[in-house]
Length: 146
Image (cartoon, rainbow, N blue to C red):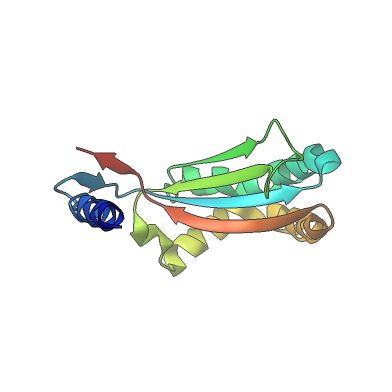
């Protein structure tokens, strides 16, 4: 019994000494990456990608050309039947200030994006719930260990 108590005490002490401090032991990146995980019906991934190309990609290309986002990406699992998601959508922002609402950015985006893209999105997006389910949304920052 004494050995068990000693082992537990040592493990707790070990955990206490493992505490890291931001900016001393690691840096926190300024960029924010928005990650959305999506479960698409396995036989509908190409249809979903087709819709994304006409809506989400077009919107992100517009935002990128305006300097509103740094980058974006679409990731598809090679094992579409496994896990809670099989598609990951990412959008990387310069920093968290880009998460704040801005009438100026909105107006610039809508002018650049145009009415034709807005109409196409209004037609395509309502079909998404038939083929996919969003399973998670996250805002992530890169941690760099020192």
